[in-house]
Amino acid sequence: MCDAFDVTPRTLRFYEAKELLFPIRDGQRRLFTRRDAARLKLILRGKRFGFSLEEIRQLLDLYDVGDQQETQLTRTLDVARERHAAMIAQREELAQAIADLEDQLVWVEDHLAEMKKKNS
Image (cartoon, rainbow, N blue to C red):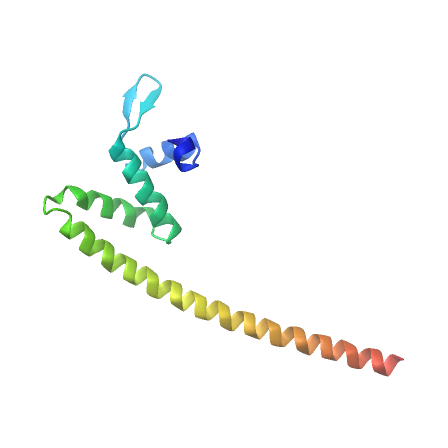
């Protein structure tokens, strides 16, 4: 699992402690099923998109509702749309901050150039 998903054993133990993964215990060894692999894939994707671990856990738990994943997919769509909107807002804020910083850089460069002209 570590090699397949480029994660550390510590990461797997952390997700197990958070009740996101449920490997079969064989003494000190942990045996991960295909279901664990699918859950880990979704966990990593959710984290990449900025979902909280609690959101991810709740979405994963909806798999067992028994309605052919309709509830899970509907809730995932809602959470994803909210996260998408937040990411768009963050991008716009970042673009404005970059533009402001660029303006400030130009002002400082111009101000330094004027100072050098006066001192020459």
